[in-house]
Image (cartoon, rainbow, N blue to C red; front, side, top):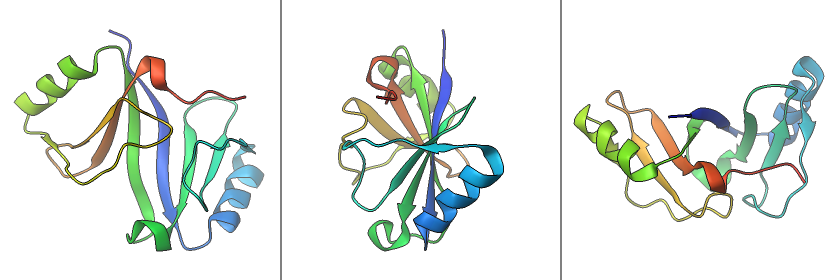
Length: 125
């Protein structure tokens, strides 16, 4: 089974400044797409996952890591296996534009994971 970390969500008080940091330090570039939350910024690097930077006022969360998105071939079987290890589904998250068939889970330590179907991953335009 082929699973990949494809996106990391961050919460920032100043998404523009945070984006500039990642662009300057790690050669990320901004991805222009209508399929992200208003006020957030999507960055793509040379290798590795997208960075999705959310403004703190829309998430109502403290700054830092918001979630890790993992693209999988079979969402249902991954969720069932995760639940065997103590992960739980998180209620209250609406379907996101960038992942119509995704489920939010918390791992056994409480880290928020977005499990996304491989076919529904964001791609660069």
